[in-house]
Length: 206
Image (cartoon, rainbow, N blue to C red; front, side):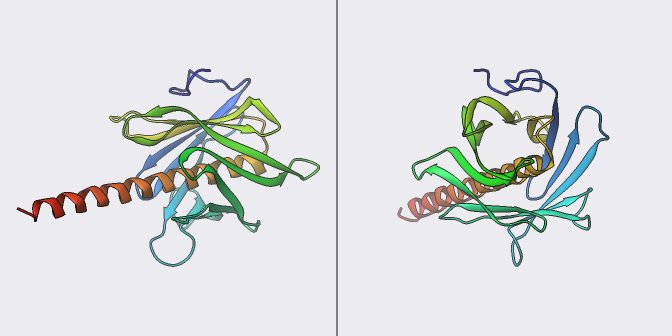
């Protein structure tokens, strides 16, 4: 199975659209796809009050609120589209960050469906690695792919999404990727702080 390392290398069958993520604490997101105008989103990371992350239409936090992400340090994160219910993004194992799942009602019949983000390739210095999204009922059919960018790239990541998924799942793809991205950033920050504290303690013992 190919790793989604570039926009030309994909397991997605048929037309697809691209979401490109730029930034660090807050994220500018651009969307390009077949038969539609370019769209922009803005993900705002909140330190105090409100949700951990808010997703807005447009290029800044004054745009229409589209969804929210609530990060939890020691348990599953949660996401919700605007005016929708909270959905848990659950890690498959406490020992690994290689697979996450979430369930919500979607499609014309509003069936309760489970989807899985699973890692397909690790990346040095990138905690998430490359990941792909599948429906639990159809694990061989790739619906979306997350590819981390190179160290010298201006973008953080590119997400490729099958074009005909529908607006509900489109939004959940975006929100769950934000959940995974910011959780990975938090782990990276915690690990760096721990390493710095250990080095300082070691230096003070001389």
